[in-house]
Length: 140
Image (cartoon, rainbow, N blue to C red; front, side):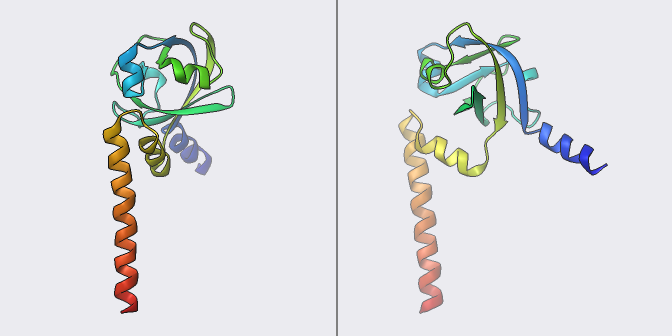
């Protein structure tokens, strides 16, 4: 029984599929998005979720943008296809995993969009200043 519960928990956060890789347009690159049919996503991942896309032992982080996408295809920015060691039109075994909080922060810090980078830097700064103020309150 505990194994079944653990398996159901894990399956909600990760999904492995055999998908055809397609190169996205300039907008896909700009938004650092992945277009993926909902049947190939983990159950807990909706539109706007940050996911870890893994193929050939390499991984990248992307935001799920489209509610649809084409069946048995994954659309990625050209840069990500290169980083994953794939080519446009390849069939590959791709793992989609929901990113944890730290991975989401790293995605935001390295995102192409400057607003996400600025927000992540301000969040880190506010955590540091909050920790400093708590430490000073304890000491003084």
